[in-house]
Image (tube, rainbow, N blue to C red):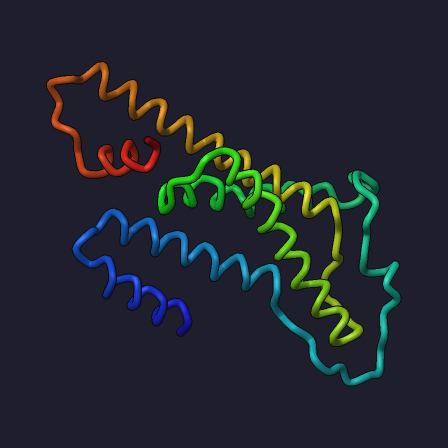
Length: 177
């Protein structure tokens, strides 16, 4: 329901710009899924009074236990690649600003999980500095892939001067300038 309302609002604002609508809607879907998979379910009450110790739920030591849940770290990287790739397509952004976003987004994700733990004394997830590092890496991989896309689009334009620029090519170049 939240997704439908959000996309409807995006459509009302950007219906005359189909490419912008596509990227904004894609990014909105991505953010909805990111919140869904990183913040939910929120366990407010358990049937059995249960409190977890902080050291069971929070890891603040970087690069410890990487082999324990290696697949989890790979998934944390893949989970944030779309952010690094799509965000520059909806908002012009410098590498300096991307540094901020690549740190801010993972901290917000883990901060939400930490807030849930503090409010309920229970968490379904581990609040882990390694997740922040892997999410940051994922955003930078996505940003790198975005730059590869721009490189090849620019190369295509130079090689095919006689080819009329499509609206998607113009959109990508415009957001990179």
